[in-house]
Amino acid sequence: ACPNPFNQQLHLFWDKKIYPSAGKLEIINSLGQNIKTENLPVGVNDYIINFSPKIPSGIYFIRLYNNGKVIQTKINLVK
Image 1: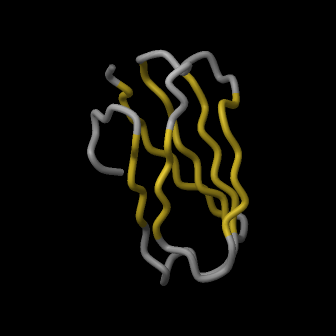
Image 2: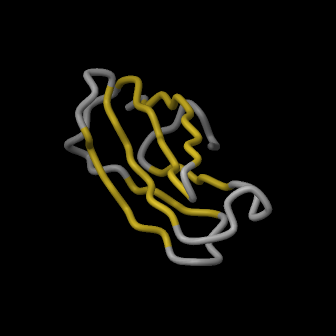
């Protein structure tokens, strides 16, 4: 994920060899609450997330689910 920390927009990218098919992306806050869920189509290996101005600064986690695998990364939203 870059940039990290970020302000309103975050660019995610991953290796198609590891995650070749459609999947699901979740953004979770530090309290474990789901902020956003996106279904990703087949062939996507990068994604841009635009955060609402209403979402406060803080630590968030991004989870990418695909074929029973999960990748999680920590991101820092700074306003």
